[in-house]
Image (cartoon, rainbow, N blue to C red; front, side, top):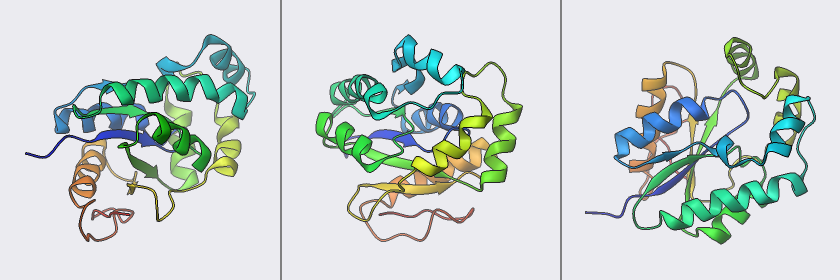
Length: 183
């Protein structure tokens, strides 16, 4: 039996990290932690006011997520985090070297529509442009997979599981709605 991954579900706001994360955790049989819960109140207040977070704002948040992921090493777990920049992912890997990323990707129009429909979230649609501007997709040397967010949450979670299963071997492209990929 292989050791369960500690998975960071990443992507811009509105890709479904909070929806897909728990579904993925359930399919993998591991606990889920909501990345937004690791934000200090000052960060939440800033985002709610439509002000993008800077790197300094993100450091304590990333450190808290990294500490959670480190504590789940060898046990598995799923946590959500935008992890938009390579430097943010490097910081998470420094705390928890074995983490694997599931990058939820999608068309800006689809993501904006989903953001507009959600209720009670502190992240306004107005910050979507800054999220896309900040995003640095996974690089070839980063352990993770990209998964397209078109379709139902169940379809997306199934693609993520298949992509993770193919992570250690060759697999087709998961960014297409039908198939898994690995990097």
